Amino acid sequence: MKIEKVEFARGIRGTDPILNDTKKHFVFAGRSNVGKSSVINALLSRKDMARSSATPGKTLEINLFLVNDKFYFSDLPGYGFAKVSNKDKEQLVKMILWYLLESGAPIELVFVIVDASVGPTERDMEMIRALIDSNTPYVVIGNKIDKVNKSGRAHYEKELAKKFAPAVFIPFSAEKKIGIPDVLRVLEEKL
Ligand code: GDP
Image (tube, rainbow, N blue to C red; front, side):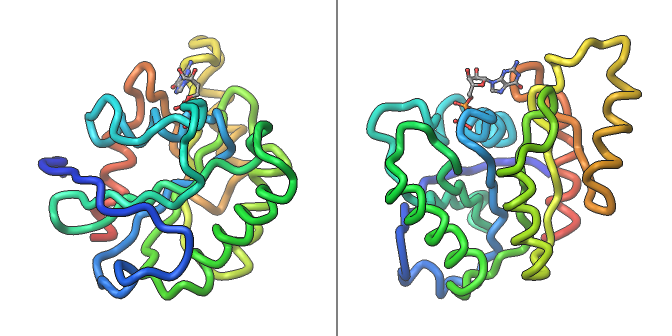
């Protein structure tokens, strides 16, 4: 699949007319600093479409990008951002769960981005549990795989995949451009 056109559609915090659009949502979730914006930008072959959570003043919104006039990439706020107050964190979790479970958005698939060099954290597992409990289809992207020593990588990837099984696990590096066709293939199967 080729990404030919991407436009920022809207940032939402709650119910919005855009949610009545029947185009499928492909959602990107992940802890802050896991490289979520880098992954989205790598998949879109754009430098700065999605903004990093390190960007000052980054809004705490769900950002929807219309891709090829056909489907949405949905960039969730990073969970567990240290610079956000506890009250705001609660709000964020509530908003994410509302969007995934109650908003009525046609969510086709959630890509849960984890740091492959760290492995699943408690935060990652909380998100995955919420997806399992709600029967939401998801795939795990293990970003920053470039940080894992090349010689041991194949074995390491296998062990990591076991931890996420039966979910599909895709080793990825936004920096070294590893795994992009694998993610696009999964996406294409769902279109
Ligand atoms: P976000 O907060 O999840 O959107 O993360 P960013 O995309 O801003 O990335 C956070 C940090 O991780 C930045 O310093 C990136 O350069 C770095 N990073 C992102 N992707 C990769 C990757 O594939 N490999 C490595 N080594 N670093 C990465």
